Length: 255
Image (cartoon, rainbow, N blue to C red):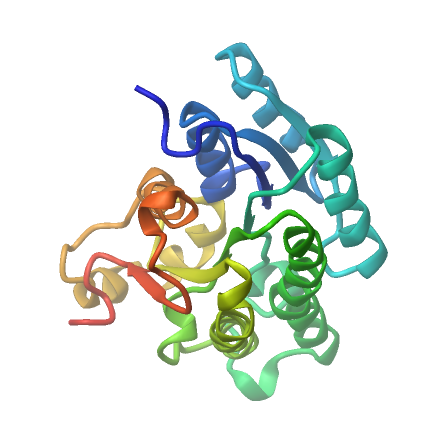
């Protein structure tokens, strides 16, 4: 039986670890050729090695997704390697602790930290979509999934810059979905809750018990559970789905 993404080419940013790595591996298993991009190019190469050893086809790309020239080069290199771009998962992102804002309330965030958060987590998604859409328009369509978050749906304490960026991602997703629907380009977002990755270690150490009380399933999610949703959204099985924002959060927002 053919995989859900058989014959497709996919680009995944933030693919060096966590959700991005799990998604890249799953995409390859489902038949896609995968470009794995990350600021941590060494980690991206490790993901590619996992894919290639399992019989898949992948390349690694180093990129700072907050920089337009590097994002454009990322998309161009993907097309150069594989001839087209069918699916994109704009997943690269940073957390408050990456910008010296971990555990800090709104008025205590450093300005440079807030700026970097917006540059990577919001502007970076727009830069990627801009480049990806231009390619997809030439090739008859495609599917884009952006990593938003439950932080794009509700407020979270000590996360003001992150929350602002993720709310913006959901707005970008909805707008692009409307604009390009008749061009056969679908744009959706996935909204993870608290997932077992390196990015959540800091907040779980500080607020883990409170977070679990607010999560209906009383557990953290796994990167694989997010990857499964992204894979479906990029597949033809989701052909009538665009402009949607899917919670994969164990019931956090519902509770």
